[in-house]
Length: 409
Image (cartoon, one colour):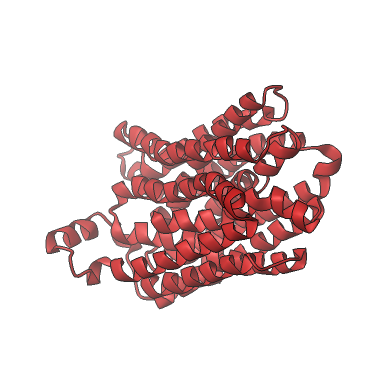
């Protein structure tokens, strides 16, 4: 969770520093769109990152990627042109793409099936908390020093975390302080048909699975919300709502606080449904659908007169997004083998970040002429389409098997 927090703090630094950085370096909104797009292009290489984590191992693999993203963040503090920022954002996206596959693999490896939802929710709190921490921390760095210092500070914090990760993380089978009883409890709660069979993940085989497309396409439709909150909302609040830097520090983190609560609410909905006899997969699909219905509130962000009402609707959007996002991300561990989880999470992450890339480029190219309102309307509707896809493509094999075993009437 701490690693995810620092990962998202580092990537969100750009969004909060953008008003000061763009003014200082005379970078236009269109050029900023290319900068944010470069990050999404880099993070779309998540399948390669997930494959490295599945083959090299979590402990060493994530340490390498986290060390790289910390160094790249520090380098941001020395860039002075938009092409330089775009190049650095592309490299940062590639390195930071390790967070989601690694976190999902940790959850799949360390937790029994019934605990994976809440474990994934707690892990994803790190993502929300890191992005929530960015506005006050970056605003402080800008006011105390300058916008360049914000990138250097977040990079140095990440370097400290790498040392903590190498000291503290081990897989269950090798952890020196794990009791035999706890190790057996973890193993007993895992699905036998999803065990690690030692084979290297096969991309083409995974691409042929309906289940993969059933979680990848909803992610492509859902993730633009997170990209908008992280990269564009500070600019929106400054340009459209008239906020200054102090107001950004006071209010821009609130949607991410709401997102923290959504990380726990999604698994709670799943648990509620399971206790009433709903299968795990159907419970996850139900939680995603509920989050998609709440997301429709985003359609009104640009239409309310009060800036504080707009902040409240953005908070609802953050809460709803994490409710459904943590649910669909966790499904990779419900549907694929342990030695495939990081690769599948990375492949699905590529589609999620493709959605962010397209959406970010559209905002950068069109916001000056059409404003933000059409984009908020789109965010309110995309997840409903994602829910339809999730119900249509993902198969609940266990529920189907139970139905087939019922005696004929």
